[in-house]
Amino acid sequence: MVIVGGTFEVEPDQREEFLADRHDMMRKSRAEPGCLEYTFSADPIDPSRVVLFERWASQESLDSHLSALRAVPESPMIEVRPKTVSIVIYEVAGERALGN
Image 1: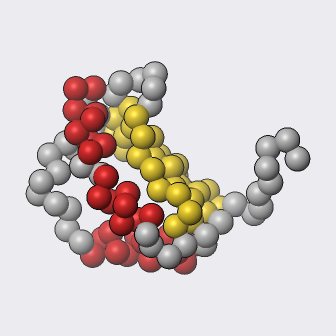
Image 2 (image 1 turned 90 degrees about the vertical axis):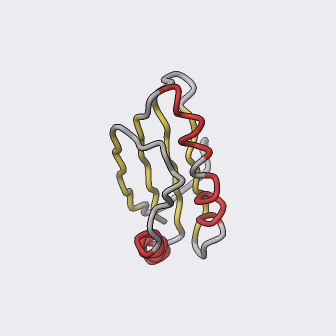
């Protein structure tokens, strides 16, 4: 399993538009083979922060997703650009339920 975690800094008054611009991307990504989770969400404490959380069944699934993203030019309709972006990929060796 592979986890992708990230943060985006946006102007607080543009955060909802930033999220709305990514709804279609979330729907498409969630339908891709190997996608277990794909979510952009508003930080409930910091109004300028958006969190990205992705889980992929394998590195190959993530690679396919990233290739597909690069092949499609970003929509000119997306007007809100983040001020900063930080995204990290984590390779997971195993998992277990909390408390076990």
